[in-house]
Image (cartoon, rainbow, N blue to C red; front, side, top):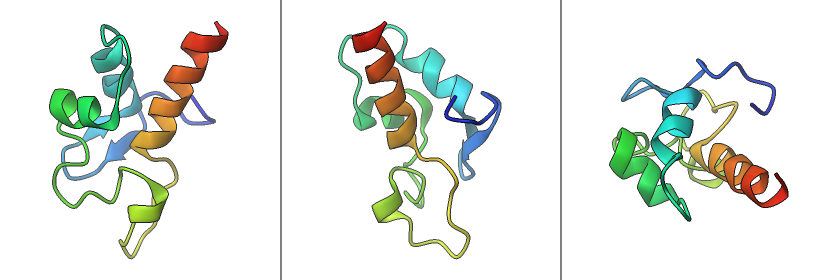
Length: 79
């Protein structure tokens, strides 16, 4: 997804991978960032992995929860 293996860890604090986010959102009709946080715990500690604009860490992330969410939504819309 987005050039990353699905085992790629997005949230270092909670050790959440892309795949875990995808699986968690499968049953959500209109998934949100809050759903990712509630269902996986990703983005609930330092919060740097949620979206690029909120990444204040020394080492910037390569992909964010919002990127995965947007990709999932686009795939559902476009098939």
